[in-house]
Image 1: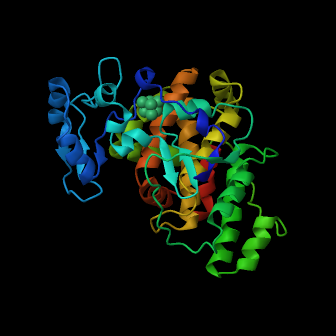
Image 2: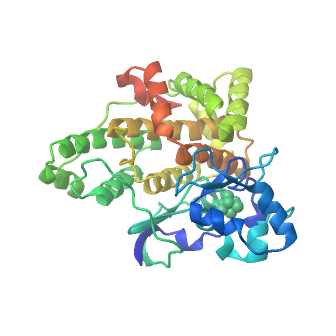
Length: 370
Ligand code: SF4
C-alpha cells in the first residue's frame, strides 16, 4: 500500500527497555473483544499466564472495539513489563501476540497516510533536526487495516491539501514561530469561510497561492500570554496525570523566580538545543499531520482547532522553559508527556473553553507570546 508519511517514518525504532517513560505506563491499554479472548485463552508458560490473569480485565462499558484492557499496577506500570523494560508477552510469544494497539503504537495508520505520535519520546528525538520535516510517498506493509476518520466537515475533497498548505505556512521561516502560528489562524479563517460557502474555486485560489491569505495583526508584547497559560496548566493539573509533574514544577519555578523575559527564555531553550526553534517547528508539523489538523472527528470548529494548536505551542514552550533543566532529555520528557494529553484525549474540547472563559476572542493570540 502506498501512503504519505513523514520522512523519518521508516527510521522509527521503539527504544524498548531504554525508554524513560514507556507508552504503556500510567493508563490502561484497551483492545477489542477478539483480542481480549485471544489473550485470555493464550497457551503460554505458567509465569506469563499469571501475569496475564492479573493484568487482563474487561473495560467498564465493554464494546466490540473497546472490550478488554491491561490495567496498570499501583505504581502505574503495565504488569506485563519485565524488569528490563521489555514486554513479557512480546518476549515470550513474539510481536504477533501483542494487541494491535501495542504493535502499532506510536504509528497512526489511516487510508493513504501514516505518521507517528509525538507522545512517544523516540519520535520527539527523531524530530530534532535543522531541516524542515518533509513528507514522502512510500510503500508500506500495514500490520492491520488502517482506520478511517469520520469527518463531519465540509472539505471540498481537499482535506489533505489543506493540511499540507497549513504545514507549509508553519514552515515558512521568514517569520518567528509565534507569528507563523498566528498566520495559520488568519489563513484558516479564510479557508473556513470558503469551505462554509462550498466555494471550491475560492479554496483552489488559496491552495494554489493565487489568492494570498489574510495576515494577522501584530502580536502583543512577549510575556502577555503567561496568565492564560498558567490558568490552563492549573486546570489541566486536575485532568491529566501525564503533565502534572512538569506543570507543577514549571508553576513553582515561575512563582519562585518571577516571570522571565523572552530573551532569557530563549537562552534557556538554546541550552537544550541550539536548533530548538526548528525542533519545535518539526514537533508542531508532526502534530498537525498526525492529528489531521484542522478536521477532527468531533464537532470542534476550525477556529477552536486553531486556538487548541496555539495552546499546544504555548504549553510546549512554557514547560520547556519552566520545567526544563537545560538537558535534551528533560525537554523530550516534557514534550512527550504533553502530547500524551493532547493526542490521547479530547484536548481541544476542554482546553479551548477554559481559554475562552479567560480571554476575550480578540485576545486569544496572546498565548503565542508566552
Ligand atoms: S514510548 Fe515509544 S520508544 Fe518508548 S516503549 Fe513506547 S513505543 Fe517504544
